[in-house]
Amino acid sequence: MHPKNKHKGAYDLIALQKAIPELGTQIIQSPDGRKTIDFSNPVSVKLLNKALLKKDYHIDFWDIPEGYLCPPIPGRVDYIHHMADVVNESLNTKNKHIINCLDIGTGANCIYPILGSQEYGWKFVASDIDKKAVKNAREIISKNDLLKGKIEIRYQENSRDIFRGIIQEEEYYHLTFCNPPFYESAKEVELESSKKVTNLGLKSKGRNFAGRNHELWRSGGEKKFINDIAFQSKFFKDQVLWFSTLVSKKENLKDLYKTLKKVGVKDIKTINMLLGNKVSRVVTWRY
Image (tube, rainbow, N blue to C red):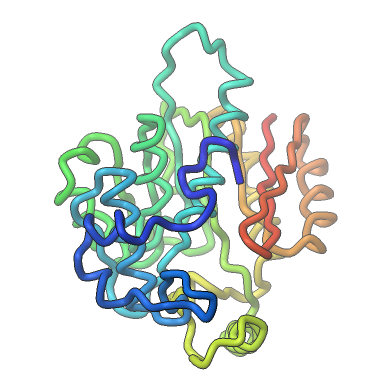
């Protein structure tokens, strides 16, 4: 994990329970005698997120509708910290910069804007194609005074557009974030979920992270989505300093690099991230 990540090592479940007392009902004992939670249980995972956000990021209210994606906070904030390094290297750090960010597909959880604004004071515009997700994200902001004035949620009317309709004239962003749908179909989601449950030796056959269809899968999967981001970024190259996206599957990097070079990108960085046994990466580029 990034050196600035607050979540290195085991969770302090006693301290987290003090933040959200309901979490105490989900704490169990592992075979080796440690306190833990059932990470295959979506209720346990959501309460853990609430406790982490309250204890470490001072977020008093956070909730998501049933069935929507519940993100792993340690991995999400790692992305934030790595992009902070990228932008700080690009700007004159002697000056105070107001960093403007764009989160593509923020979801009902609004997690990247929350973490970025709380860790670094960044300002965010966050977009989504799901009206219910947009409504929920706005509710989170309205119920946390610390987030008001820092995060604006915009509804993307055209699901084929990524930046058009969201980035307005005269706006400038230092960073963009995206957690793309990783899978090509609902069937692939369930197969991967079953594999994960088996590998972890869990009893549950459900998905602890949940997620609506458009959050997890899209025709063409991650490969097509990240190449769409790369291609469409060229139309906004004068309004963004660093574009970025998560890339879950290493085999998708080759085509992404090819697309980025084709549209004239001059600078590409690939940042590897390790969370537990899962390896992911951020690809970031500028013109």
